Structure formats: C-alpha cells, structure tokens
Length: 256
Image 1 (spheres, rainbow, N blue to C red):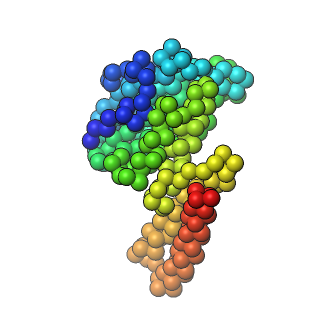
Image 2: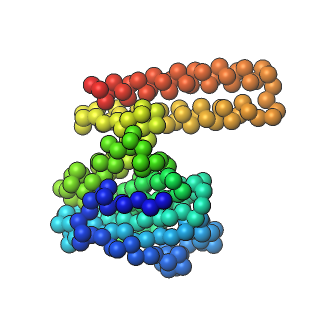
Image 3: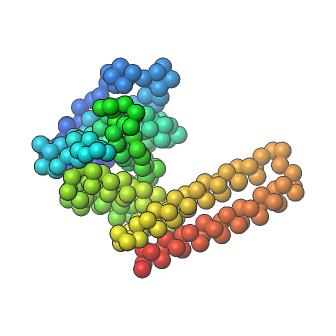
C-alpha cells in the first residue's frame, strides 16, 4: 500500500525531501553495520528520505543543552519486502543508524507502523548521541476509523513547537497512547495532570496482554498435561481480569 504521509504529518513544503531513495549499501557503510545487520536491511524493499525538520525548514528552534543536542529530525519512509514479522527489527536498526532523532513510517502489505526515537547526549563518549527511547504504534490499518483520532495528533500544527524536543516528545507520547486503541476501540486521550498515570496503565496493559498471549501459547504445547492445562487456564483467567480492570481504568481517565 502507499499512504499519503504528508496528509497526516502536514509538514511545511520546505521540509519535504521528495522521497529520495536511501541506498542500503550506503546506509550499511555509513553506519558500519555488521553482516547480520545488513541482512536485516534486506527485509525492506525500499527506504526513502521523506523529510527533514530543521530551524531553516520549519522555523522551529533546536534543543541544545547539557542533556540534548537536537538540531534536526529526520523522517524516513520504509517499504517492507514482504510479511510483517520483521517490522520491529528493521525499525530498531534504522533508528540506530542515525545520530539524529528519527520518525519512521513503515508500510507492510495493508498495514503501517509509525515509530519515533528520542535521543540524548552520550555520557560515555563526548560528541556522540544515544537513543534514549523508541516508541512504536505496532502495525495497524491507516484506514481504520479507530485510528483517525491518533493520526490527527501527528499533524505538525497540532504538536508543540516550542523547540524540537517538545515536538518530538509529544509525538512519541501520542504514538505510545495509540497502542491502547486495540483494547479500547478508540484513541485514549487525557489531560496533562493524568499523563503519568495513563503512561503507567498503558504499559501495564501491554505487559499483561503479552503475558496472556505467552500463557495461551504455553497451554497449546504438545507436552502439557491436563493438570498443567487447567492451572494455566486459571492463570489466564486471572490475567484477563487484571487486563480488563486496567482497560476500565484507562477508560475512566479518558472519560473523566
């Protein structure tokens, strides 16, 4: 599929890079990738330089202080070679290939994924940067109405423009919240005062859901006895109750 990404991000025309292709060989050379990492790049069909946000292209101020040196944000469009299993692996590698914060838009079949990296200065190496955090939506259908509210939050004019750190940090927060859509059926929003609690609840929900999935897989194992299966079923029910309680707490904040 091909998404009209700037209908979503609404970046100024001056920031757009025209979809110039980024050759895998050049990326591997500049980032000094290992042979194994180069094979990971083969899981994508095409990588494009979509846009660069700088003071010159958007009039947004950089963030340069003791903790950060953010003078540009790079947007990349990545078309996967097939399947969806390698989306997270490829995105993680691409984010590490750039010293700047990056926003990566991946297209995999009929699904898409948006991920954002946040960087800070390295405490060990002068002049270097490290990735502090990566937030990812996971795969979703951009045409799904449940995601419409989330996609609207990515628009340039909807995000704070005090400086590039404020812009990035809020985008990453919005991306993190999008992972609650599958459970809630809508994009969860909250006031600034509830952000810390919302962050904790969404993280806990994700962890609980992941554990439920693992337990289901364990229960389907060929060597699981009837007694073990019964115990696993009880654990699953308990975890599902915890998950549902977390979902209700998230809804209460959203509707509060």
